[in-house]
Length: 241
Length: 166
Image 1 (cartoon, chains in turn purple, brown):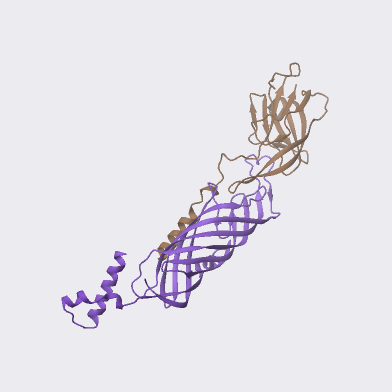
Image 2: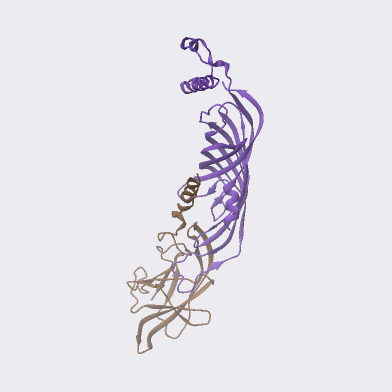
């Protein structure tokens, strides 16, 4: 709060100086700064994850798309969400599997950044609940057999589909959104996730969960990032408190 | 900003320790045979000069790679995972001199069902077996007298699956 009142003071002082009005020291004390009202833009921001688009074009084993958005509720709090779809092929020495599906994420962002007057940038932290509905196809595998030299190895490329898979997770993210043109934002965020439930396929496991990302043998954690471009549809302005 | 983006991609894509199959991962188990004394069925008995070969579908002899003979009382041999039957020729008093093989060969036949078992992302699947039959082919000079399936499920190599009495 001290920061806010200080910046108010400096901004008003700056404006007073620019207007070229000379004020006596004693007059300054009597002048109230509340005459300047800072208006904040409220609205719906819609965007997409550029990294998913880039990877779709650059990587042969990935395709994905996401629409994300946020709606400003208060001075600092935004309702935020995303939905999208991903297809990702995982290949190791012994198997090749493709996960395909869609996901939804919903939650809140809190802006931690104190903007200068007239600016609408965000450095934010957020929390999401994520849910994914997907299927996995085991495209091919080679049986793991260290003694296969005698009789020869066994491989199969008969694809096997594991359908009706779901997973849910909690996600904490940290990022920024910078207004690069009027109402156009570029942003980057990193995500740490923890699965809270999932349906495991029979005699297989979820190697990739759309929206969650790849899974790790070590536990329920996951990581992700987003590189977003978004457009703010301005709805109304509200005075900064 | 771009640097940061690339760095993060590297961090996220490179931590793939569990994409390499560990040597400790359970592999497809081999068949474990233990040799017992026909006159004292509780006691193991050494097979002098024990040597095993595989026999393929065309009746050709197949050298067994990594065959394990422990004290000549336990023999560990791989099953053919592309078939549901494997034959072995087990020699007693095997001896190879000037390309002439001496010894007494007996032929065993194992039939089994194969089940694929998921291990991990890095190792994929291994096979387990369920022994259906185990038989000794009749010949004029058998050194084996009898056999007994101890454990039908072949899931690891710590178990003894078949006993052969001689």
